Length: 385
Image (cartoon, rainbow, N blue to C red; front, side):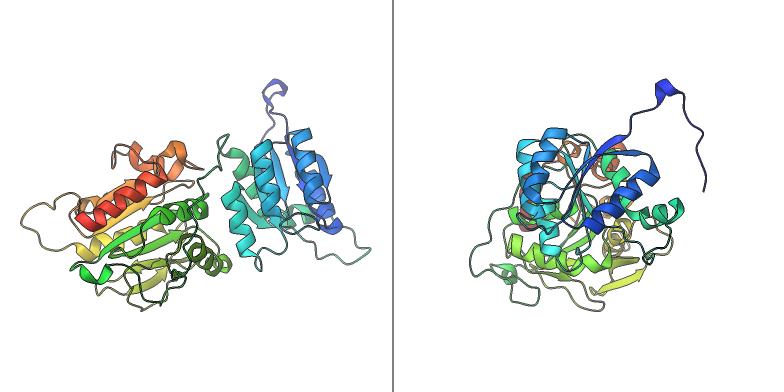
């Protein structure tokens, strides 16, 4: 383990204050021990229930809240809503039951939580001593996410809630798309890339898009594989657009959302129009947005006698909130192939890194808020410009 030399005393920032809200004594104890072992945070207090947690956060005003999803009085979704309404604070969902409660997770993100991780656990038997190294190993994921969330700009995490889904609308890929999709000669492809803050942004974007447009929607969200199916189901329920995890070899249906399976595989569209996966190799960001965009650009590329007209190719690349710069290189390829390129206004993103990168590189001049992005995408799908 490398150790950075300490800075001078007057340059050292005070440790970030943290509050734990969790009804499990074991989870609280392990989490508190991990925080103490790291030394880069200051535990301000702990709450054993949701209502007490809201009161404690508003009284102590920590920089970060570690919040469980299930508690005996109110759940983590309602805790998040109340905190963001009364004393907005960075919230990291930390729960032992994330995998089986993805709907709660994404609803908490919609209400303003910034990210999620598993509550750390120790494998030591009763009576066994636990070293600082053991605690730091167990808390690796938690500590990394804590630092990431604390690095985000102040005020991040507030997103518009999409309109409610009308009764009777389709909710899963595989059902017949509504509207006039079959009456258009050309089906267009809209590819969307997102990372931190992405689930809420995707719900807002697709919730504002009319259903039944003659377009296939491909989404690469940086996410672990265990959460992708839950995200697809949640997006279906939130937006009314049928959504599912993309299957290798399938031919996508207009009006449907296809999510890249999380983990170290990239979703691509083959020249024959089928969804395929490839290994992510040593890519930093997975599923890789650049590779998805590059596959679309390659699918429409070919011998040309004249340069492609901007925005006239049947592909549109969209970059939403996220850390890093994944998607910028791919947007440049889509633009060079004559496709439409759009980004979320960095000022409205939970994290402005990804949507800001294409602007800094001159690929686009500016971004748009999510409702305006939806309007531009719908106009491009129907009018081709």
